[in-house]
Image 1 (cartoon, rainbow, N blue to C red):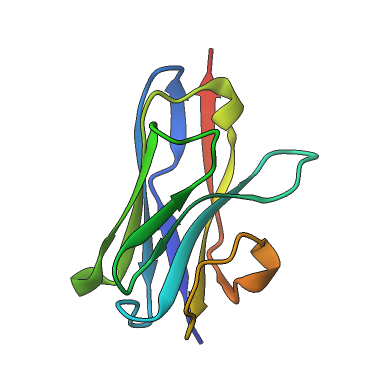
Image 2: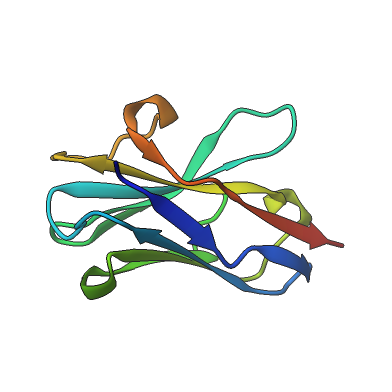
Length: 125
């Protein structure tokens, strides 16, 4: 059973920064897509960033481009999401997700097989 454990959420003021971490219990360095999703109340879960661990290609939602950076540490089976210039609209529960044995990074949450428990990010104005 794969476990994904997120950490790093919290409350910040607008313009601040947070770094989320996702530690995976299973080797992630090849043919794996690791994604960060978020879900605000009454909204659908959306992918904000993803990284294809074979080669390091990254993908971002338009709403976070230039502000968020996804990265990986294969030695630690850990993926990070650095979030800068945070806005109140970034407030949501953030989830880490993994799709193993993949040759691409999907956008839909339903295409990811493993999920973390989530970490809350709250940005105040």
